[in-house]
Image (cartoon, rainbow, N blue to C red; front, side):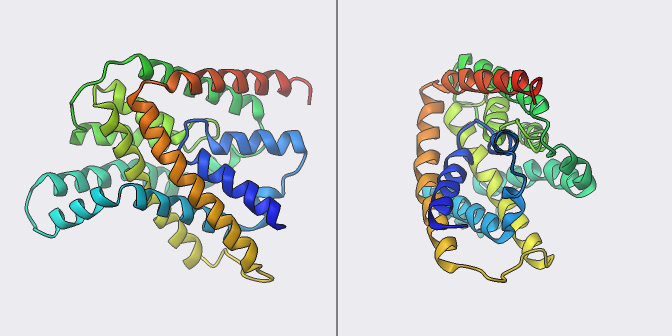
Length: 264
Protein backbone atom coordinates (compact mmCIF):
# COMPACT_ATOMS: atom_id res chain seq x y z
CA UNK A 1 0.00 0.00 0.00
CA UNK A 2 1.42 3.39 -0.98
CA UNK A 3 0.73 6.88 0.36
CA UNK A 4 -1.93 7.67 -2.24
CA UNK A 5 -3.86 4.50 -1.35
CA UNK A 6 -3.60 5.40 2.32
CA UNK A 7 -4.97 8.90 1.71
CA UNK A 8 -7.86 7.61 -0.43
CA UNK A 9 -8.81 4.90 2.08
CA UNK A 10 -8.52 7.41 4.93
CA UNK A 11 -10.84 9.84 3.15
CA UNK A 12 -13.36 7.08 2.39
CA UNK A 13 -13.32 5.86 6.00
CA UNK A 14 -13.54 9.37 7.42
CA UNK A 15 -16.61 10.32 5.41
CA UNK A 16 -18.50 7.02 5.24
CA UNK A 17 -18.21 6.42 8.98
CA UNK A 18 -20.64 9.29 9.53
CA UNK A 19 -22.53 9.88 6.28
CA UNK A 20 -25.52 7.53 5.86
CA UNK A 21 -24.32 5.71 2.74
CA UNK A 22 -22.91 2.46 4.23
CA UNK A 23 -19.13 2.15 4.05
CA UNK A 24 -19.35 -1.66 4.15
CA UNK A 25 -21.81 -1.66 1.25
CA UNK A 26 -19.58 0.53 -0.87
CA UNK A 27 -16.60 -1.67 -0.07
CA UNK A 28 -18.43 -4.80 -1.22
CA UNK A 29 -19.49 -3.10 -4.45
CA UNK A 30 -15.96 -1.85 -5.03
CA UNK A 31 -14.53 -5.35 -4.50
CA UNK A 32 -16.76 -6.78 -7.18
CA UNK A 33 -16.26 -3.95 -9.69
CA UNK A 34 -12.48 -3.97 -9.23
CA UNK A 35 -12.31 -7.75 -9.07
CA UNK A 36 -10.08 -7.44 -6.02
CA UNK A 37 -10.84 -9.20 -2.73
CA UNK A 38 -7.55 -8.35 -1.08
CA UNK A 39 -8.36 -4.83 0.08
CA UNK A 40 -10.19 -5.56 3.36
CA UNK A 41 -7.71 -8.27 4.35
CA UNK A 42 -4.58 -6.44 3.22
CA UNK A 43 -3.88 -4.83 6.55
CA UNK A 44 -6.03 -5.26 9.64
CA UNK A 45 -3.65 -2.91 11.43
CA UNK A 46 -4.37 -0.19 8.86
CA UNK A 47 -8.12 -0.75 9.27
CA UNK A 48 -7.80 -0.49 13.06
CA UNK A 49 -5.82 2.75 12.71
CA UNK A 50 -8.50 4.28 10.46
CA UNK A 51 -11.29 3.30 12.85
CA UNK A 52 -9.32 4.75 15.76
CA UNK A 53 -8.98 8.00 13.80
CA UNK A 54 -12.73 8.33 13.20
CA UNK A 55 -13.51 7.42 16.82
CA UNK A 56 -11.07 10.11 17.93
CA UNK A 57 -12.70 12.65 15.63
CA UNK A 58 -16.03 11.89 17.32
CA UNK A 59 -14.49 12.53 20.72
CA UNK A 60 -13.14 15.87 19.49
CA UNK A 61 -16.48 17.01 18.01
CA UNK A 62 -18.38 16.04 21.17
CA UNK A 63 -15.62 16.87 23.66
CA UNK A 64 -17.80 19.24 25.69
CA UNK A 65 -20.62 16.70 25.89
CA UNK A 66 -18.22 13.95 26.91
CA UNK A 67 -16.61 16.08 29.64
CA UNK A 68 -20.08 16.89 31.03
CA UNK A 69 -21.11 13.22 30.89
CA UNK A 70 -17.97 12.02 32.68
CA UNK A 71 -18.28 14.78 35.27
CA UNK A 72 -21.92 13.90 35.90
CA UNK A 73 -21.23 10.17 36.22
CA UNK A 74 -18.43 10.78 38.74
CA UNK A 75 -20.96 12.47 41.02
CA UNK A 76 -22.49 8.99 41.49
CA UNK A 77 -26.03 10.32 41.24
CA UNK A 78 -28.97 9.37 39.04
CA UNK A 79 -28.61 12.59 37.04
CA UNK A 80 -28.99 13.29 33.31
CA UNK A 81 -25.39 12.33 32.58
CA UNK A 82 -25.65 8.99 34.38
CA UNK A 83 -28.93 8.24 32.62
CA UNK A 84 -27.35 9.07 29.26
CA UNK A 85 -24.47 6.69 30.02
CA UNK A 86 -26.92 3.90 30.88
CA UNK A 87 -28.72 4.54 27.58
CA UNK A 88 -25.43 4.27 25.68
CA UNK A 89 -24.68 0.96 27.40
CA UNK A 90 -28.15 -0.39 26.63
CA UNK A 91 -27.81 0.65 22.98
CA UNK A 92 -24.55 -1.31 22.70
CA UNK A 93 -25.94 -4.62 23.96
CA UNK A 94 -27.74 -5.82 20.79
CA UNK A 95 -24.68 -5.27 18.57
CA UNK A 96 -22.34 -6.89 21.13
CA UNK A 97 -24.60 -9.95 21.51
CA UNK A 98 -25.15 -10.38 17.77
CA UNK A 99 -21.48 -9.75 17.00
CA UNK A 100 -20.28 -12.38 19.49
CA UNK A 101 -22.88 -15.05 18.80
CA UNK A 102 -23.18 -14.74 15.03
CA UNK A 103 -19.74 -13.52 13.94
CA UNK A 104 -19.28 -16.22 11.28
CA UNK A 105 -22.80 -15.78 9.92
CA UNK A 106 -22.27 -12.04 9.59
CA UNK A 107 -18.97 -12.54 7.81
CA UNK A 108 -20.73 -14.74 5.25
CA UNK A 109 -22.68 -11.71 4.03
CA UNK A 110 -19.41 -10.05 3.04
CA UNK A 111 -18.81 -12.30 0.08
CA UNK A 112 -19.38 -10.04 -2.89
CA UNK A 113 -23.16 -10.41 -3.28
CA UNK A 114 -23.83 -6.92 -4.55
CA UNK A 115 -27.50 -7.71 -5.23
CA UNK A 116 -27.96 -8.16 -1.48
CA UNK A 117 -25.95 -5.00 -0.81
CA UNK A 118 -28.09 -3.11 -3.32
CA UNK A 119 -31.29 -4.24 -1.63
CA UNK A 120 -29.97 -3.16 1.77
CA UNK A 121 -28.99 0.25 0.36
CA UNK A 122 -32.56 0.73 -0.86
CA UNK A 123 -33.83 -0.15 2.62
CA UNK A 124 -31.45 2.47 4.00
CA UNK A 125 -32.85 4.95 1.48
CA UNK A 126 -36.42 4.30 2.67
CA UNK A 127 -35.41 4.86 6.31
CA UNK A 128 -33.65 8.11 5.44
CA UNK A 129 -36.61 9.36 3.40
CA UNK A 130 -39.09 8.65 6.21
CA UNK A 131 -36.83 10.25 8.83
CA UNK A 132 -36.32 13.32 6.68
CA UNK A 133 -40.09 13.88 6.50
CA UNK A 134 -40.54 13.60 10.26
CA UNK A 135 -41.19 16.72 12.26
CA UNK A 136 -38.51 17.96 14.64
CA UNK A 137 -39.31 17.71 18.34
CA UNK A 138 -37.67 18.37 21.66
CA UNK A 139 -38.11 14.80 22.87
CA UNK A 140 -34.96 13.17 24.29
CA UNK A 141 -33.95 9.55 23.79
CA UNK A 142 -35.55 7.32 26.46
CA UNK A 143 -34.25 4.05 27.92
CA UNK A 144 -36.71 2.11 25.77
CA UNK A 145 -35.68 4.09 22.69
CA UNK A 146 -32.01 3.32 23.32
CA UNK A 147 -32.67 -0.43 23.14
CA UNK A 148 -34.64 -0.09 19.90
CA UNK A 149 -31.93 2.13 18.40
CA UNK A 150 -29.39 -0.46 19.52
CA UNK A 151 -31.30 -3.15 17.63
CA UNK A 152 -31.17 -0.93 14.53
CA UNK A 153 -27.41 -0.63 15.01
CA UNK A 154 -27.12 -4.43 15.23
CA UNK A 155 -29.08 -4.82 11.98
CA UNK A 156 -26.76 -2.26 10.38
CA UNK A 157 -23.91 -4.77 10.75
CA UNK A 158 -25.18 -6.14 7.43
CA UNK A 159 -23.40 -4.71 4.35
CA UNK A 160 -25.51 -2.03 2.71
CA UNK A 161 -27.33 -0.88 5.84
CA UNK A 162 -25.83 2.40 6.99
CA UNK A 163 -25.15 2.42 10.74
CA UNK A 164 -25.57 6.17 11.13
CA UNK A 165 -28.53 6.16 8.74
CA UNK A 166 -30.28 3.33 10.56
CA UNK A 167 -29.71 4.65 14.07
CA UNK A 168 -30.53 8.29 13.34
CA UNK A 169 -33.60 7.36 11.29
CA UNK A 170 -34.87 4.95 13.93
CA UNK A 171 -34.39 7.55 16.65
CA UNK A 172 -36.19 10.25 14.66
CA UNK A 173 -39.04 7.89 13.73
CA UNK A 174 -39.46 7.17 17.45
CA UNK A 175 -40.22 10.87 17.82
CA UNK A 176 -36.88 12.04 19.18
CA UNK A 177 -35.38 15.44 18.48
CA UNK A 178 -33.23 15.31 15.33
CA UNK A 179 -30.12 16.94 16.79
CA UNK A 180 -30.34 14.74 19.88
CA UNK A 181 -30.81 11.70 17.65
CA UNK A 182 -27.61 12.52 15.73
CA UNK A 183 -25.68 13.16 18.95
CA UNK A 184 -26.80 9.86 20.44
CA UNK A 185 -26.07 7.96 17.21
CA UNK A 186 -22.48 9.17 16.99
CA UNK A 187 -21.67 8.76 20.68
CA UNK A 188 -23.19 5.27 20.96
CA UNK A 189 -20.74 3.81 18.45
CA UNK A 190 -17.54 5.11 20.08
CA UNK A 191 -17.39 2.42 22.83
CA UNK A 192 -18.06 -0.27 20.21
CA UNK A 193 -15.22 0.97 18.01
CA UNK A 194 -12.76 1.02 20.90
CA UNK A 195 -14.03 -2.39 22.01
CA UNK A 196 -13.49 -3.83 18.52
CA UNK A 197 -10.01 -2.31 18.39
CA UNK A 198 -9.15 -3.85 21.77
CA UNK A 199 -10.51 -7.24 20.62
CA UNK A 200 -8.38 -7.18 17.48
CA UNK A 201 -5.26 -6.10 19.37
CA UNK A 202 -5.64 -8.66 22.16
CA UNK A 203 -6.75 -11.40 19.78
CA UNK A 204 -3.37 -11.47 18.08
CA UNK A 205 -4.95 -11.04 14.65
CA UNK A 206 -2.98 -7.90 13.82
CA UNK A 207 0.40 -8.25 12.16
CA UNK A 208 2.98 -5.47 12.43
CA UNK A 209 5.37 -7.22 10.05
CA UNK A 210 6.77 -4.85 7.42
CA UNK A 211 4.62 -2.03 8.78
CA UNK A 212 5.15 1.34 7.11
CA UNK A 213 4.56 3.94 9.82
CA UNK A 214 4.39 6.68 7.19
CA UNK A 215 1.47 4.97 5.44
CA UNK A 216 -0.30 4.42 8.76
CA UNK A 217 0.26 8.03 9.74
CA UNK A 218 -1.02 9.57 6.52
CA UNK A 219 -4.06 7.29 6.56
CA UNK A 220 -4.78 8.25 10.16
CA UNK A 221 -4.54 11.97 9.41
CA UNK A 222 -6.80 11.70 6.34
CA UNK A 223 -9.44 9.70 8.23
CA UNK A 224 -9.28 12.01 11.27
CA UNK A 225 -9.67 15.25 9.29
CA UNK A 226 -12.45 13.86 7.07
CA UNK A 227 -14.13 12.41 10.15
CA UNK A 228 -14.22 15.85 11.79
CA UNK A 229 -15.76 17.36 8.66
CA UNK A 230 -18.28 14.56 8.08
CA UNK A 231 -19.43 14.36 11.71
CA UNK A 232 -20.02 18.12 11.95
CA UNK A 233 -21.63 18.22 8.51
CA UNK A 234 -23.95 15.31 9.25
CA UNK A 235 -25.27 16.94 12.43
CA UNK A 236 -26.11 20.05 10.41
CA UNK A 237 -27.79 18.01 7.65
CA UNK A 238 -29.99 16.13 10.11
CA UNK A 239 -31.11 19.38 11.74
CA UNK A 240 -31.93 20.91 8.34
CA UNK A 241 -33.76 17.78 7.10
CA UNK A 242 -31.37 17.12 4.22
CA UNK A 243 -31.31 13.33 4.51
CA UNK A 244 -33.40 12.98 1.35
CA UNK A 245 -30.34 13.63 -0.79
CA UNK A 246 -28.57 10.65 0.71
CA UNK A 247 -31.79 8.67 0.27
CA UNK A 248 -31.77 9.40 -3.46
CA UNK A 249 -28.09 8.54 -3.65
CA UNK A 250 -28.64 5.18 -1.91
CA UNK A 251 -31.52 4.34 -4.28
CA UNK A 252 -29.37 5.08 -7.32
CA UNK A 253 -26.35 3.11 -6.08
CA UNK A 254 -28.51 0.28 -4.76
CA UNK A 255 -30.41 -0.03 -8.04
CA UNK A 256 -27.18 0.00 -10.07
CA UNK A 257 -25.74 -2.69 -7.80
CA UNK A 258 -28.77 -4.94 -8.33
CA UNK A 259 -28.73 -4.40 -12.10
CA UNK A 260 -24.98 -5.01 -12.26
CA UNK A 261 -25.36 -8.30 -10.36
CA UNK A 262 -27.19 -9.77 -13.37
CA UNK A 263 -24.22 -9.17 -15.67
CA UNK A 264 -21.31 -10.44 -13.56
